[in-house]
Amino acid sequence: MRVSLSELPPDLPAPVDDGAADHLIGCQLPAVVLTATGGEQVALAELEGLWVLYVYPMTGRPDEPLPDGWDRIPGARGCTPQACAFRDHHAELQALNAGVYGISTQSVADQYEAKMRLHLPFELLSDTGLLLGRSLQLPTFVITGRVLYRRLTLIADKGRVVKTFYPVFPPDENADQVIHWLRCHTVNAATVRDGRT
Image (tube, rainbow, N blue to C red; front, side):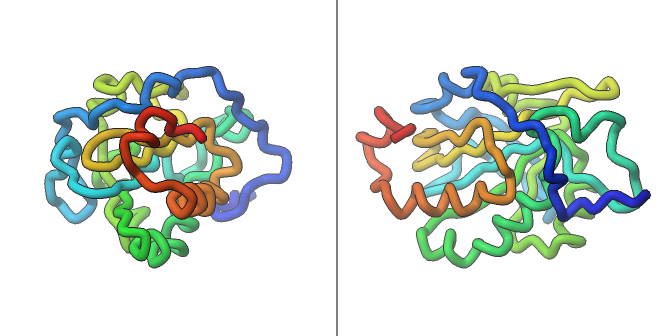
């Protein structure tokens, strides 16, 4: 039976907050350079202004089966609905002066396939070496011998993390959550100190 990547099963297990992202508020984005789907090299530490970095495990492909047990891993399923939500709300994010990058450990080729198939107006970044994860100690999990990121979203202002969303569930509502937070907060020193309000 073919699995729909764009629809979330009704009985997905919800992830719990294990505290694995508690340390991220106030962190500077590291001197990590990742390759984008357009081929350019993106230096995260040099990002200016306001950026939404949504980190996700793996975007499924319609021509490949999902790993066995994928839907039973809390927070694993939903990368396509999350990406499509950021696509659909991209104009609102632009109006809030926020750029968007999606980041996973998938190859540039896999990221490019997803960007084109889903018509994403923003770039996806490939972190096959888990450079960002090692630098910021991002939460991960292992399946079929592959290390993948757990789903989380960072809002960075002038290269500093001012807000985290973790765990992210359901993933198709994450873009709405980000926009609501951006509209309700002035990104300044106060939000760096108290980014979870």
